[in-house]
Amino acid sequence: MTVLILARDLDPTADEMVATLNERGTAVARVNTGWFPAQFSVSAGLRGGRWSGHLHTPGQLVSLDDLHAVWYRSPEAYRMPSELSDAERHHAFLEAKYGLGGVLSSLDVVWINHPSRMADAAYKPVQLVRAHECGLTVPDTLITNEPAPVREFATEPTITKLLGSNTLSEDGTRKVSWSRLVDQADLCGIETTTHLLQRWVPKDFEARVVVIGEQLFAVAIHAGSTSTRVDWRSDYDALSYEPIDPPDSVAAGIRALLDRFGLLYGALDFVVTPNGDWVFLEINPGGQYGWLESTTGHPLTSALADLLSKGTT
Image (cartoon, rainbow, N blue to C red):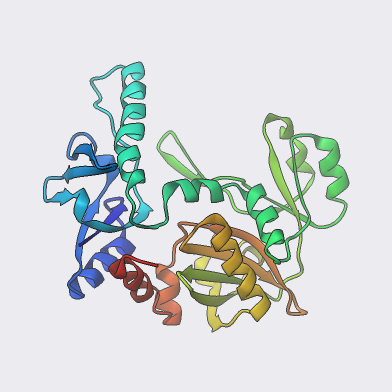
């Protein structure tokens, strides 16, 4: 039986997982969907209600029938031939999405995580509602593109953060937007799209909880600078880490939330107040974990490899 890892070419975390699975004697195939169609092809036939066939890459012929687990790590988008027109590339991309993507998505194997479940969990407004339903505390939040509600909401300390990715590539330059405290400048151009504003939660520290199957690995993230007090991602060198255990009620809420979304893996962020209350911020169904393993000793790669190797929950 084989584990399929869908990941981009340069991914040290995926490299480590391949090495770990190889050491365990688990067959593994690593594929970047960005290779399709130049370096990656598919042939699948429907037999007995299941797609059978193979994925063909320069280094491997992967039988769909042999797959028992898929790690949807960080694959890149299909790259359609440059000689096609824009319209032709768009058409070819959609055909690949619904053809190759559809075949893979139909496979009855363990997914960490299934792309459909990841898509469902990607909406922050949905995350906040589901987290509340699962017993977790969530901050007061506003989503709007109207200036007046922002002025009213921001009479108390408020932060703003992006609803989707916090990176933007433009003219070959990668720009990053961190969460920040709201000021009057944030009212300029607010009508152009929706914005998320959230009540500032007094913090002792922040916590990231990595969930792998039934296991929870929690880490306290201590800010060492002014900028990391607002968004710890802004300066990793200013952070310190400490393995901790979440309260039982929080752990139960986390497990319920993962179950609600149908996820086997998730990286969840919390603010922990000076009173010890845990306030949910968000869940990332494909969140990074490698740097936490190296700084805390939590056996995250091993736990994830266990889940992939077994091919069952």
